[in-house]
Each structure stands twice: as structure tokens, then as C-alpha cells.
Amino acid sequence: MTIQRQTWLEYDRVLTARAATLIRGPLVRGLATFLAHSGDTPVWLLLGAALWRFGAAGWLEAGRRIVLVTTLAWVVSTVLKPFFRRPRPEGERGHFYLKIDRLSFPSGHAVRVGGLLTVLSGLLPFWGAAGFIAWGLLVCLSRVALGLHYAGDVSVGILIGAGVGGVLLLVL
Image (cartoon, rainbow, N blue to C red; front, side, top):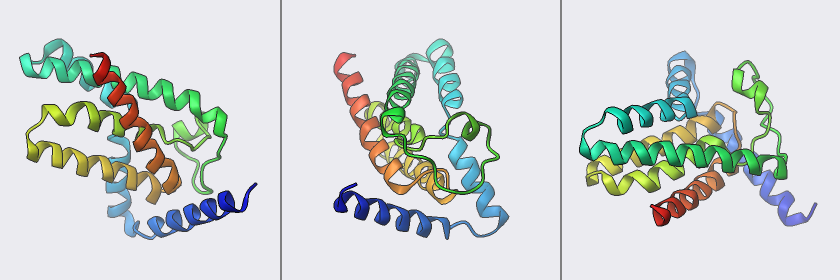
């Protein structure tokens, strides 16, 4: 391992440890857990499918984009994880998906968030896009603060997701 890579990984661990200090008490933990799960694949697939099937005219396109980018983000993050084989941070392992997906890089939630922000922000008014971006950043922060990912996992994941969303917009 190169010195630069070691330095980056150590910096990543330090940032992750700092984020963990944000979780103080059961109320904050509960809010962070809710935020972390608000970015789950099933949530977005169900929402997207419902909008695509039952939404009014403007919402049909949003639903289609949600389903497509959520699916593509899952495929991309699932394909990339075995190449990097980065284990998740040490900590609790009681969550169902952590037993199935033990790899951390890139964060599938962050890839999904980056993709969703890219394909949906243009459909929203300014205030809606700003709120959506804030939600996405909070999802990613909560993943790190809860010890589910390293800070680098979500940072790079958002960028990968933005790329996935950009490619999808070019195709659509």
C-alpha cells in the first residue's frame, strides 16, 4: 500500500470517527436511523413506481427517473464493491442489510442519492431542489455517523451517483 493511500485511509478514519460524535442520545440516533433508511432502495423503487403508475403528468416523469436511476445505482454500486473489497467500519452489525452487504465502498445509498439529486433537481423548483439536496447530504452524513460507512465511501459514492444520473439524463 502506498504512503499516499495509507494517509488518505487514515484521514478517512479520522473524519468517520468525528462524524460518530454527532450521535448523542437515543433521539438523535433514532433521527439518524430514520434518515439513513429514507435512502433505501425499496423506498425509492416503491415511490418511483407509484408516481410512474399513478402520478399526474409532471410526476410521471419523476417516477420514471426514480425507478431507472435507483435501479442503475444499485447495479453500479453492487458491481463496484467487490473490486474494492473495503470492509465496513467496526461497530454494530445488527442491521439486516449489513449481514448481506459487508462491503463499504462505494456506499450504495450515496450512489443512489447522487443519482436521484442529478435526475430530479431539474424537475423541482429552486426551494424543492435545495431541500432535496439537504436531505441527500443528511442521508449520507447519517450513514457515516451511525458507523455504517466511512466518509470517503459516501463522498465518492455521491460523485459516482451523479455520473450515473448524468448518463441517464443523456440517454433520456
